[in-house]
Length: 97
Image (tube, rainbow, N blue to C red; front, side):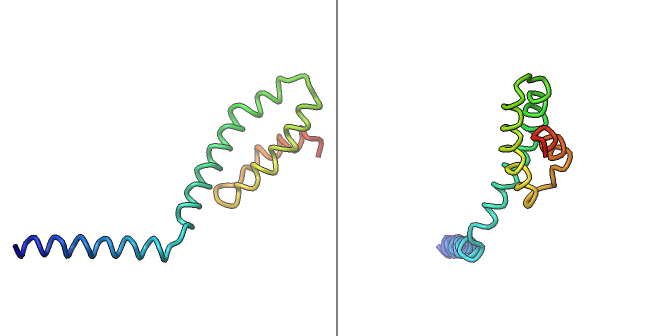
């Protein structure tokens, strides 16, 4: 019976610690993890798909508009992950900046 009480007490203590961590930590840990993952996915997508598509396309207006829309979005993720400087050069050049 005492062993059961110890187990319940440990479980209760663990739940209090987890609850306090969530309350005191807020959403910053979750948000940063989500933003970093999203930024890494966006950089990979742009490197593997967006830039090659822009380079082979003959539609200059579409390429310019796509680069103007994509570059600031991609650069904003540089705050939570590594700066996408090489992609920014390509996108800004194809946007005519």
